[in-house]
Length: 377
Image (cartoon, rainbow, N blue to C red; front, side):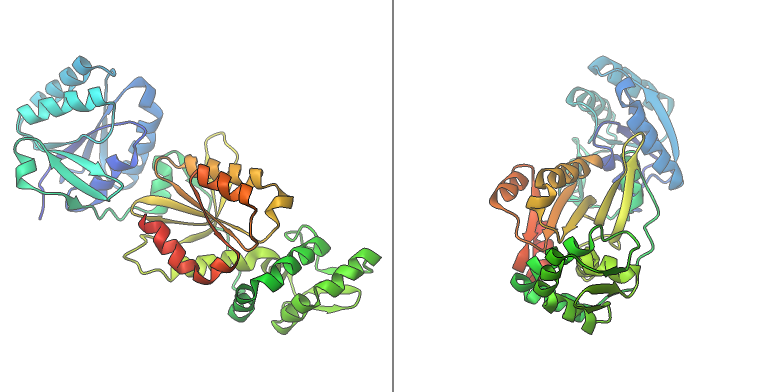
């Protein structure tokens, strides 16, 4: 069914995505490819973000300045509709303040023009008003929204996804996850031995007495790595096969595992191919790297992957970074921490308080189930 609108009129506010979603759905998109934005001085920057994404998708954008008052919105809307009385313009009443939405609603309802409201939590659209609410029920939105456009509409640019290593050792990962209690501390000790796993050093030899003792502790892990062709070792030296192998052993395996799990979720549950190591940045802000990110129900889901001892690394810093990311891209961004080692109770309580999901330790065995449940909340 085509709803045959010439243009959408929308109210710009912090809820930017709901103004974009119905425009990108062929069922509801205005046939004249035109979007009119009502913009207060306070929302000018958000209107620029929305306009940029709309233009990128082939729409013509017009901005009407308003004040956040009933009469300002009422008069501007009435004048605009009077000048375009031969067009069928639909009101997206999702954004703006309640006063703004009510003023625009009153004008459209009086003129028997279509009004709709976007339920972002249900990824649906509901028609309002005396005429159209009776004609149409709640309808699903199929926007085809990309992760890049979602972030862009909230003012966040994305750097090109880093080229991913082809290194993937399912047998190695399976062993680490199935015997998590055995390997968790060993992996931490190995990370301590080689320090800073993202530099380019591959050979570690002439280890101190303390580190020689640590070498004995991590022998089962070193043997597993050697079996998989990731490194070689003797009693006083460790040599990684290459930089990719070092990054993989020291934690990259978990990011790859989580990415593969998300990629295996049916496409009717997630909208886009998940991104790994995606960097996002708002104007003037420090970049944030998302280990794994994807869209579901037109909402950003971001996953942080940790194999280190969070108590030693600083759990507060980890949660702060995640909270920053979860607020970065606007409303309803969801964050999850996937930790190979079991975080302490304090971290779990703090994460719960700020709405961050945690999957820990042996729970990684049912990670796909946990992620699908998380998406469905």
